[in-house]
Length: 320
Ligand SMILES: [Zn+2]
Image (cartoon, rainbow, N blue to C red):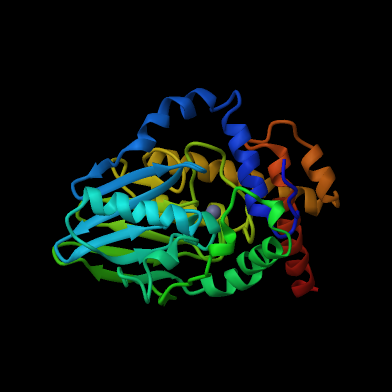
């Protein structure tokens, strides 16, 4: 078992916890039952395809347009992105012209360099305007730590990673025209991270939510999460959805509005408990110990409760 630095590699650590949890009792059968999907493109709606890649059962989405392909997220490391590019070229008959990152986390962005400026693909990369700052705070130190001690995560090829933030950082929503269809990119307020961006394809009413929701494991409070704001962001998205809309999570199989509402309620309960414990003067550890029915593994809530407490402390100081 390699060693991980708790601060630098928090999202990777929690992803491991999430994977271990997903392999356990609560969702184990569901995860095993869906493994077959990882070997092929699944057509979510006409011209919209999801492929689930290991490691991490990450969702990659391709949206076909008359003028080219839009690729959503780029996998964990450059070697995997090279494989992804070959898979896309084998399955589709036109080039990738647009890449979109659903958020900054490494498992969604570390393949960017294979598609971006200076490559044969030379795609425009769209993402939330905070991605470059998130890279500087989390992903950059992660790479620096790896370079200082490559034995810490021997399964990663992080020596090859060149951090490649979006060429088109977004503050406001943007409608992109793929030739014969529109795709709306909607940067979100702080939630799973401060870099979340949702895609909406109006002609088929398909939503791509990144890690704002997860299906094959519990949602993850990874590096730079906002436990108090997250449920409200999901509530806002669910309010814009119709019951029959299809929703692609960052990890797992396609779900619907009811699933988003359930996950929003789970996250709201967690946020409410953190607030109540803070108001009652409990320490973060006491806040977690006060309940034995958390909807996600309590081991994965340590960073979340700390971040929630910091936000609540800051609110209290602002009021004082
Ligand atoms: Zn994430």
